[in-house]
Image (tube, rainbow, N blue to C red; front, side, top):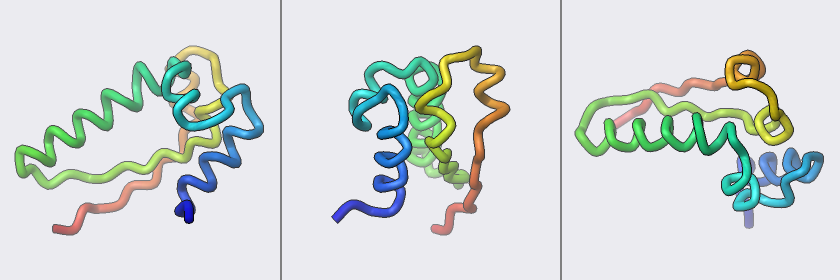
Length: 85
């Protein structure tokens, strides 16, 4: 059974040019240039034992946007949750 975030992501993708999550990850410039490096940095900090903040980015605005990254960042809705250890 898919979780809520996966279900939301899939419903957002169905309204765009990407057919599924793996298609989005392989073809999206926004994911390749910004989200993947951010995720890797957060994981590296966590592996070093540094308390970090998990950032959940609502993918609704990411999947269909093909404009400059600075403009994309204006459309992001970021929900920040403090990490509890």
